[in-house]
Length: 317
Image 1 (cartoon, rainbow, N blue to C red):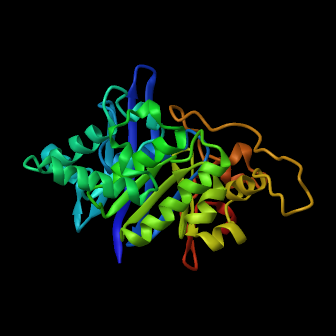
Image 2 (cartoon, rainbow, N blue to C red):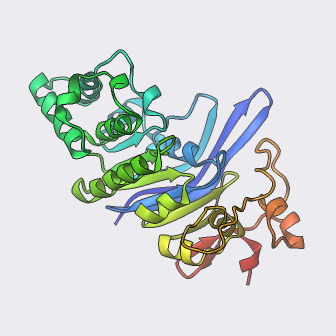
Image 3 (spheres, rainbow, N blue to C red):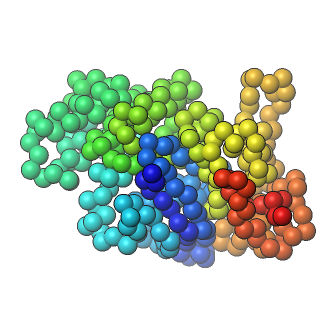
């Protein structure tokens, strides 16, 4: 059963130097108790897409398309109805917990503020119990509710952010780069927490990351984005064992793998195109090792192969 679906999402930013076409015609869905990974280089539109789901984009953003939740397009919700949905039905974990947590507020106050926003009549004992349960579920002692954010390590602060995200038991949790700046051991712990929550809390997770290894470990399906477009969409097994798009193939080769003899570090030459002045044709053509004449003339559509989707002229029958 589909829990949340994004249909033909387009996002533009109006700036002094022109219009930035951040996301174009992005479509995907996440089922109940499923983890969907959104992966790609920095600047490809991953976080913008995640923030658009909850309408957390800045005022200069223009959004078009649909985000369907419970049969309704939430992009059309009023501000008040959207406020009631955030945190309760759909929640988000932001990239940097130190800038997301107020340094002069105790951890308990962050929880109390969240709970009161949806239940103004909640008693302190009830709120403390809810906060304690959320913290304990991510491996943090409830005794630390009275601590300040600076008294936690980076990994522990990220656990607090996850606890805040699940306090009201949302149906969908958006995790925006939850392991950024954490060492590999702590990353493993955080991913373990998210995997456990998917089962125990009966929620869907949209995991936004640039780390392909993280997606392989915890996701059920994956979306690969490049220059604001979805270029490949498939279940994780197919995405890793048989990537179709040249960009996905190069991304996988750029990740060091200790299990193979060839340990040469590879990279993708070139850089993302200017999203204020998008070139004609395929957005990846200047970096693609399989470029064809048509790639410079016409932008490829989405081709469906079995149950997969890929945006590349190599698969035009």
